[in-house]
Image 1 (spheres, rainbow, N blue to C red):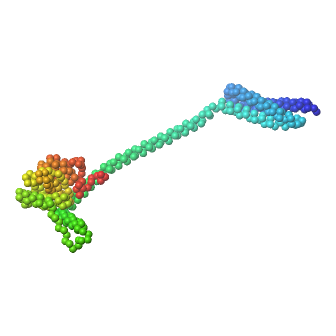
Image 2 (image 1 turned 60 degrees about the vertical axis):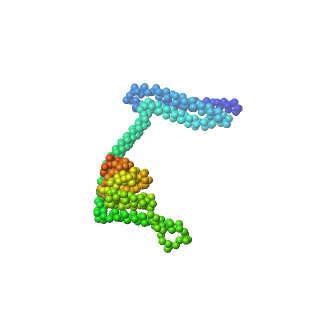
Image 3 (image 1 turned 180 degrees about the vertical axis):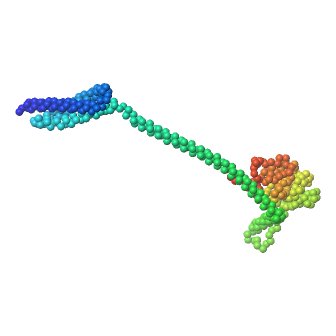
Length: 407
């Protein structure tokens, strides 16, 4: 056979394949249409009008699917014919062998058409099903809101309970403070009573104080003697040498003068004691009796030989066995100073005010009242000067018990 005959046979075989594919596609489309009609027949028995109205879009979908299948089959046939043309002269066998992929293409086209038709039918039959995911979101939001509301209620309850506890704790603190105040007052009273009994049992408190002062003077003298020995010489001095005698204070003549003038004018019994205070720059010191304290102070100011016209210091001290008032006076005329002391009862600390004699005694006496509880008779304004008026106790007393332990 010639080449022309072979080409002619190939063309004829290709045309036959196309016709067969088109016929098969038509047959399958018709079969699908019949199957759809048979499936929808039971559904449309109750509502014939609705079914009839729904046939138009379905028919259109079927026709479109059939046309697409035909076009795909034709394209595949052309492609296969072009690929098999140069291979061999056995065209009928090649053409027969090419039917399998065509059949596969047809099946795929038919399946796609079915899927499209089913999707359209479902969309028309039940459009409400598409809203179900939105409903799930709303449910989740509602649950979240309920959880948030529950948390807010729990937080509000917790705050309320905390406030109730805080108010209860404040009440407990007030009760505790009241109890502490009562306990402090009771302790102070008990300590005062115990000290009063101790003073009543042994009345030698003043003698003990004098002994303590004498001991301090002796210690000071011993230290001075030891220092003098050390300076005397490390090699020449011997341990057998007697201690150097302590020289009398240069202020001793002034003390003797004060004692003599006071006793001449006021009597021998107005002074309780007198000495040179070596621990305070050898100040001449006079100790007056409680009932002669103001009289001696007045004499020290107005006597022409003494003339102590300036009060530079006044303070009180709690010695536990008694209270003591210390007054430091200075004479501008004589350029000399003197210290005046008086011992008073600790349980009833009271003495006369020196404010009428020296205005400088005003605030120091108020301070002694504020911190030690000493009352100065005749003071124009005997009130606290440092602490508030409602303060409990006097902080410089040795038996002071703080009302507020946190301060």
